[in-house]
Amino acid sequence: MPALTESSPETPFSSGGSEVRSTGVPPLGALAVASDEVMSRISSKPLDQTPWTEVSAEMEHFRAARATREQEVREARGRLSGLAPNQAKMFDAYMQSASPLLRTKLGIPEGMISWNTWLAEEAADSQVLDVLKWHTDKLHSQQQSPEFGAEVEHHKNKYALAVEAAVAKGWIHPEGRQAAVEVQGMSVYVGDYFNTVFKGMNAYHVPGTNEIVLGQEKSVSAAGQIDSVDFNHETNHAELGGFDARWEREATTNYIAKRLDSGERSMWPKSEAVFPEEGYSPEERLMHLVHKGGLYNVPIELRTRAYSARSPEARAEAIQKLDDALDAVWGVKNFRHIINKAVENKEQYYIEKEFSPIGAEIRAVNGVYDELLDRAEQLQTNRRLLVARLGDKN
Ligand SMILES: [Zn+2]
Image (cartoon, rainbow, N blue to C red; front, side):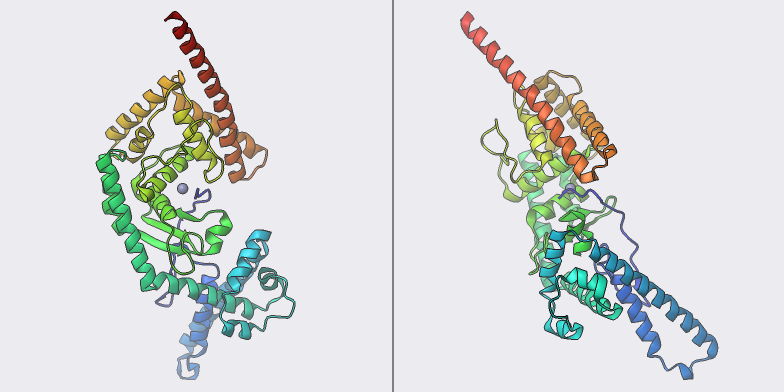
């Protein structure tokens, strides 16, 4: 999915030597759980046999860990109370999978309305901590399980083969073959709800890294199955290529992800006049119109090759080919640049109107789509008139 809030990776942290990092970005409460472990380790030491200088250092350690734990638990409550109704529902369903042991330990009150409200407002710190422990452990064991490791290997190999086949067929640039090699060294993490789904994305790639994060129970099922298209999408971002304009990057990334997955030549609906909204993002609709709405069709392969060219020379050449073709069918010089600028300007307009970044982006792309559709219809009318006139002459 489009990752609007792609953030830089947080620094991995460890608690006194034991590595607690199990995902690219730690799950909600991981730091609270780690601090709690530090506290219990310190408090279980036989302090009466320890020199007083060390005791005082340990006390400092203990106090720091306690402060961290309290702050993190507070933050977790904040995140939980901020869930939208549909997210709260998802979280409830998630908590239904909690072990009976945890449920007994928590002593969930009768008539509890929702898990997130209870945790945010009524539960004691220790109860919140128990839930965070369960959550962190669950993600950690999913991440570490041999089944997940095998699933990751499977998808990496499948991706590499699909890229090779695409290069052979010519719709991915020969330089894109490198992605088939580099995917093997890519790190794949299970991201928790709070870092993915509740931020409006199924999965994301951390820019500038060789890591992708797949959202729990979205891109990775509870049983550990990885969604192929989501995997390909993020891997494309990480290894294959891109475009500067966000809408173009997302549309092309997803198109390539689907085509690598299915192996089909055409990933678009048969009818070219109307592009269904369902199942396609606004970005994909705009891309379809850009390629099919001019006087003639522009092969999508010109775009996928430009996306996957690596060296500056090859890239410039492939982009030139794409631009020349688009300019010709739309009868406008620098067509792609004009479209990108139009999306950017509209987005800015909506952001100033205080739409959310996602809302502004979608409105901007849809707005440009509508305007371009008008232009496409004009072109088609002109073409029909021209054909009719030529027909008269004959
Ligand atoms: Zn994306």
